[in-house]
Length: 143
Image (cartoon, rainbow, N blue to C red; front, side):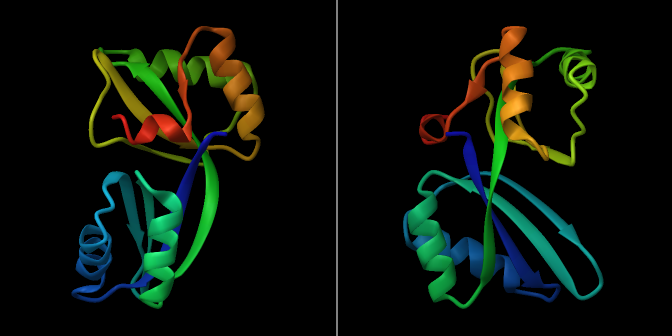
């Protein structure tokens, strides 16, 4: 299984982001990666956590509207041009990156990026064919 991402719809007002972080922290859930995009009225907070099911339960209990999505987490060479080389592989495979963001930490000499594709399985296959390590959900807690 690829990595599951929690997408939360939150009001764009003071304290809402802190509420999410506090609820997860109080439950002992570690945020491993996040992205926040906003408009004038609401934001979309995308999270990858070490305990997805628990986080979903905590956030739903707190009244948040959320959605799970499958994303691809891949190790990228942490050097100049590393991202460009991986994007070239994806372009050659005809894959369009819908959005991406980075993990909080890297593994050894690799950065870890999260990609959203309309066809995650095809993206994983393209990446693995050229030797790029794709992380599984179980790997997230070990980063």
